[in-house]
Length: 571
Image 1 (cartoon, rainbow, N blue to C red):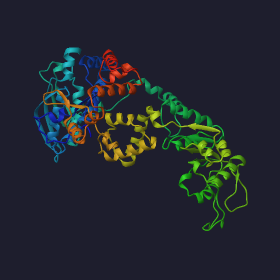
Image 2: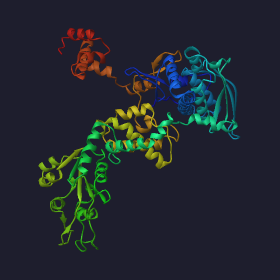
Image 3: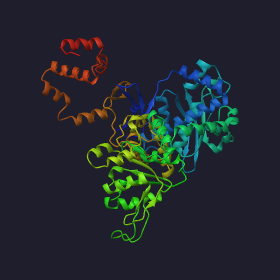
Image 4: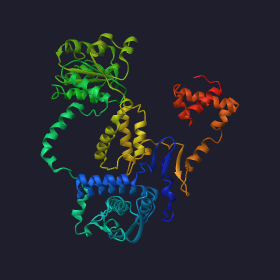
């Protein structure tokens, strides 16, 4: 189940549907609004940060920085209210955005004028912004300003309106309490109705901070290329220690002709590493031929790899070279090499030792110069013990093994890979998203990835297809069976935290026949036995760390130790 409750009819006087988007996790220090993680931040800290930005960047650059921050927030809020009230009109959605700002503590918005005509592309609005956090921040912490100071709110309301109305809307602050006006008055119109819209739009474009950096651009590019060269291997991407180890080994192997054996689970990127080795070698301008040995029928594997002469068998109507001849002077990648037949293994051994081969049905010996990179996700040594793989071929291939770690052992690479696959498939499908929600990214980082990088790529592609254009990819887009933790809480009408009723009902229905309490009583028979079982389970789960076990059960260490002693449980 997603964070979002069932869509409801919009009522500007009822903020409960929006309040229900706030979730707290008991066992984690997280606050969620929809699928975005939120923070409670002291206004004084934000004021200090704003002051530092003005002093460091200058007033105009700092203004642009905070307006872009607001613009991004407005995009997210537009998505949330559209999802929560799918049948609401643009005006109703816009007003829902007002309530959202109030709920988040940013500002109380009073609507003076709101005129919307989608067909005629007409929009005009005047809003009184009461208790603006930015004007209050200026008055209480930074002192009065010489111009409008509600930069984040201007960016936010402009973005919110643009997304909901379907055309570029710009709001300007005509009056501001931060510069000693009576109120903060915002006025919004279509961008082209403002004479200075081109100049104003520049605030939403990120620009370099220090002009002098332009003079060093060439040097920076050279340094970046050197860093890229040392930390990457073709399209094999990452930044973890495991990734760097693989790159280092692969680059050393690329300098010679030594046979390389790539080891790792399915989907870890063995072919990408093989291509990286080829591209970093002196053979990079020669052919790279990849062969999946498991995909070729056993009776055809020899002819596919080593070629066939006309009439060698029924159906061989013409002579043709095999993959090794096509890869001459280049590199051949033999994936799932463990699937080779005994005859193909013997021929491969000869190619490796003598650099020569004979086509099937031919007596002529042909010289080949091919760099062999083999790969498998099974143990070749075990296959040797079982008699399925030649020992002499194993030792010939295993001259330079490289073990590629699974994705779950290099989780630091996941955000980089997610970004790469998003760009790839956004371009392929001509779509644009706002990326993964924070909950979706957290779920991706915690998943075990049995299919590794290939599974991650497929999941990102599916999520992009399921998500609508211009919105965030949610956890449910990636994991169709994803459900929120059962201890999730929402805000009740009385502003207190209570369990999410939807999940409570679901949990009750699922366990209506037999709850875990029924099972515990039937198996133990007494309160003392239940307590003893829980304490023992916590101790074992904490690997006999008493402090950790106490934390699991929400007890102090002395209380936990007392209960252990009382029940004669030895640790």
